[in-house]
Image 1 (cartoon, rainbow, N blue to C red):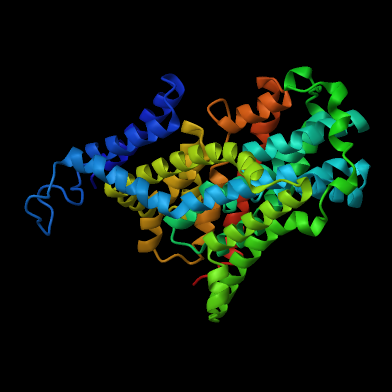
Image 2 (image 1 turned 180 degrees about the vertical axis):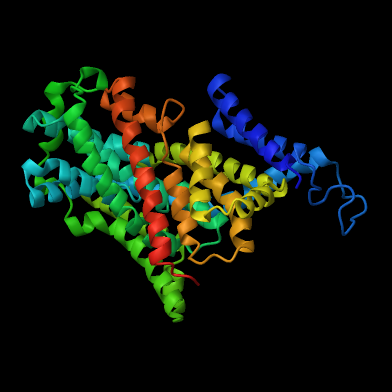
Length: 468
């Protein structure tokens, strides 16, 4: 066994960690450089390199040159798969916020469960709202509500903050159109609709377990609401003082979420049932489904706020900047994952898994967890681990559906969020928690959810294998 591909993986990961944390290189640049480095250091011949077959006179190039070219090709391939989806999800997210739809959903759950159960209401509504909205935006959206509820009820501020975190962190790693799950679906060649249904379902138990732990943490760790969180405590009650008449109906608020998810999911169901409906297949194609969701979201914000399309474009513009960064980083990660495949990393990992008789669900979780802890980004962990695992699961005869590999990687990417994770700083700075308080709450919470998710995957893959 040639161990060099494993050494290349180690070198690349160390390079990424040092570049991001020590030299403060942007993650996009670090991933592109790591992809080229991985290809250049590999001992395998790259497609189009001198000496590869079939020969193409005049078009074959050197090893490092092909490494750079294949990095660009991998970037473009991934962009074609996730670029439009991420941009459309950004439109839906900002329109839900600006139209008051997100606030409406939270208020309905508050009315249903009562103010005494405000934490439960935040948890449940947050799980729903976090599906189409990127975590940072989602967290900033619900934080004023959590702060106002704390001022109004006097209940634990820590509990309200963690209620928001429980749902958002799970869907971020399990449910498309979040970039990580989307890229996992592509790398593992899974139907996106199936991954959405599986991700939402599989996330319920870990999210509930995390919410149980969140209340235990809140009882032990006291974190006051501080003005340093970027708000004035005296102004917080105004957040929930908006008249109900100014908010859209609950159905209209949920439509931009349930319309695309329903269409995509229905196509997956028809596929399982082997029923052909071309018109539904078109509407349920993920790009078309999300486009319809975006149109519904735009129409909602135009109606609620009386805005012209020009003003709507002004609202969407800044969110495109955020989506653009996500697309760049995700596609760079896709290029890095493709280069790991060219370097032969998967074959070495497969050999080790067979020799040590490792459970592949556990192996998928472990690879994702190690990469996550090493470099911080859950998205990078998901796309790298899925790129490594796909060749392994294609050569192995899994006794269970490969969706469990998808779920295990997603849960692994939640392991130990600390100072090298942007999510850690998002929670810390926006909530006003100190670093110690964030480690005692957020870090423990996501780690617990990751472990519960692993146990759930291991049990369900035995009891409910859904083997193809």
